[in-house]
Image: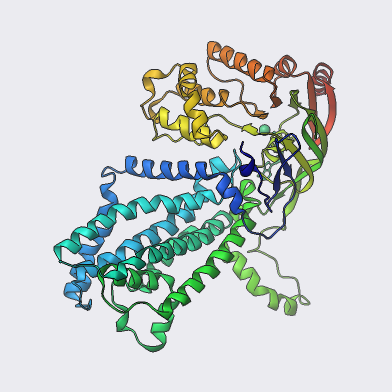
Length: 294
Length: 263
Ligand SMILES: Nc1ncnc2c1ncn2[C@@H]1O[C@H](COP(=O)(O)OP(=O)(O)O)[C@@H](O)[C@H]1O
Ligand SMILES: [Mg+2]
């Protein structure tokens, strides 16, 4: 075991340190009720994180008949349905963009988010067999669930490129901001996922709420409709939802339409930071007794 | 810590009973929180029967005031009746759950085998599961790769390496799981009644492997029901009763006393 790997301190139940003989000594004691998960420890266990992600991706593609095509079909078919009902029949405007590409670019991060909070939310309860038999930082479980969906995102992203080619949409230099919005999408998913995972391990009725929450959240995010339809206080409320910034930001960055999200970005970053910090605290709090209750 | 591999001082674990957490609902908890300000007003009146509310939590001390020291390379059997806290002790030392009281220090890499095949996934092949299970046990990828052939040879499952383990018989499954575990040589090995599996020949092989592990200087804490196993493998035994150490000493005498108490 490398020296640097072992030389981190955790605020959790166990403090690792090296003794004079350079072997690892683990101290086991009751931990504080509130604190943050140790990032050093997550880093120490990065190989396990990699394998948990690898397992999730592999199993998902083995279990579905369609395999990796599923990652594409889900947002694509949703886009087709949305285009028919909302774009054509209901006549919802999509600005300068054709409705299909307008909704698909929104569905990309939306699918990541909705699947991510569902899978991260169920992840602890679904990993009871691991949690009660081996030690590792439990944060790896929801983290792996979210990261595994990045692969789906990448595959579905390929279809967007095809659509852009078809509609002859050339990205502007705004495309440089894309990684930022992608990161915001990941962090939003992780923050909400952590909250749901911890709540779900504590309370048995949470998982019935999640599908409903996801549905409400979709309507509070400009995936189906453009945000310019809303004005005044509604616009501000919409801006507090970080997924609004993600969807609008990706539309702007990839397709070069609309205004850059501006001040809304900072509101979203603030909201996500708050959710993430409280989510980590609450997660750590439930982690202490997790193995006893799942 | 010198040559002490495991040291525990006043170690205790309290579980919550009655209001077992998984039976809680968010709805009840929120409703209870919302009632708090009103309860102050109504408490003078007749105490309403608490139909919706679960019984007040009761606690169970699964382990209490356990202190022990295990020297490096020592093999210690943990014996005791069902529910005496044996698994809880291993779970605390493996950091799976946190103690409520006291502390422990463990020197070196800890390997916990509380069950075989932890993390095996039925959809993955034997080869894939060797890696997954190995990493979960605490091996790194390079170590697994280095020992891969040995693991496969030990399991005698060469032909089924690329078959998903959901198609394995239970015997094959256990063999693969044991083979991975047997090639993980931690400094402190925690074994929880994972002995009586596999056919006779395979069991012999596992015993042989355990002997090698012991000779390599690994410290072993072995939970077992079987007095013969305790005496065969361990020079020392700790007898737990009601979460406390009832006796600690040479395995022959401790195990005898334990067996006598059972009759
Ligand atoms: N997660 C838990 N929640 C509540 N009680 C538990 C939990 N795990 C174990 N117990 C209780 O703690 C006691 C000790 O259990 P355990 O350590 O598994 O005993 P052993 O391994 O010696 O049979 C038992 O009474 C058991 O019911
Ligand atoms: Mg037990």
